[in-house]
Length: 125
Image (cartoon, rainbow, N blue to C red; front, side, top):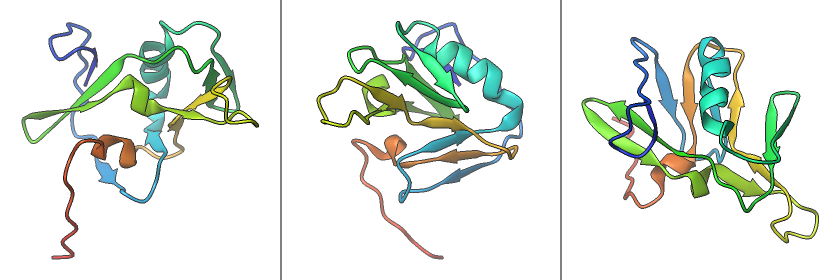
């Protein structure tokens, strides 16, 4: 996993960490054992961030760094702008939520933010 850009040196190896991909969820979940490190790196550069019950909030003007995950020797990017959701009462972009949450399990659940700009087909076989 990398934070920043595709050439970033902020790289972390997450060996043997299973992941579930879900195109039906807008939220992604971070394995319990990586929660602290992941959120320190993800929201560390944002201003006006606060956390409540594991949910990270910020002003919508700021965006987390892009995150790159390697799956089967291919880097897949989740853009910072795709990791925030406007939750302000008037939908005026005054309050956003980071759409990664800590999990109680030790596997990733990757929501539909990873599918932006990709063509996805579902094959039950």
